[in-house]
Length: 423
Image (cartoon, rainbow, N blue to C red; front, side, top):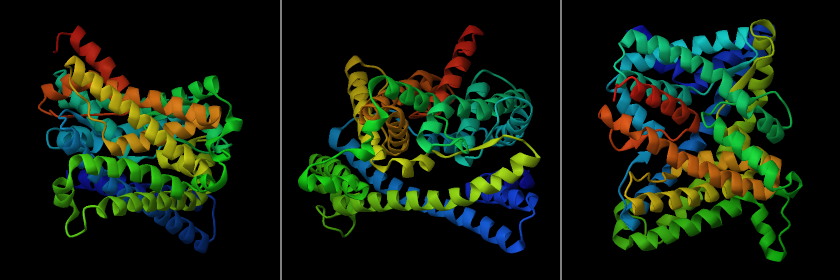
């Protein structure tokens, strides 16, 4: 058990090490000189860690906003955020989750090897979340640990290979090539965003090509646009929450300065994310080619959603805002009709909304960005609400999974469970 825990959580659970290991294997297969192997491996790991540092900084700033938002508007409900619900699920089904994750990765390799779905899912965090969701749903159906592990691993393995394929057409429009795929379990929303974009707009009218008159042209710089747009939202929420609520979080910082610093921290985090992504993509793509040529010909690495941010930085901001507005509308509607209220948590709404915005923009310009991200914001509010009763039935109250790909599987399993009379 100790060895299993080390492999799953200390190696496979560390995305930077997993991707670095793959880069190392790829470079060795290509028989690169020792200096190229060492530098390529280290740059891959460091680039991914830089991306992680930026994500942590951005998430920290958004956590503060989320706390203020709940205080400001006095709403209580379910918070759909995978990190939290998976952490709780691990206290209930630790072995089942671990073995589904390992088995799912092995199954993914077999599917990529022997089917036309040539995608290898490399986002460790998302793999862990999928394993957590599957463990909860399958155990809630009354399955034994062995049955849950075997069925969960097979579902996970096929999902890891098939879901990236669903979004690949739009991913190709984003990156301009077929070298990488989307390794984030929201591909249904991303593919839909790209498709909607193609119907409502023109990629020539990209968010990155918007011509702004006079002094407004400074907003073409995404650092400026992020700082101003997020700053407005942060200050409005802070003012509604009140001085006392802000001071309780600000420590010794003045309550009117603290929102500014959080805003700038978020903007800095986004810049670091984009810098890290550019570094590690420059290394992992050619290194991964060595693996695919020898072991799984034609396979593509499916990587985490921020890999698309550098392709349309302005769309990331516009997508987040559009998706979050959709989440707020859904929240107020749910509260009004008396159903379980899904609180739009800023962290998943940023990463999912921003990515959906990039996909919509790639095929439909700024109109596609806005519409695609808005619809995605609705999906990541409704999906978690549908599967929430199952989460609550096993004691995991107050949380759910926002990813559309996970919730689709959860909805199917929920339907099967009801048909079998399991709940």
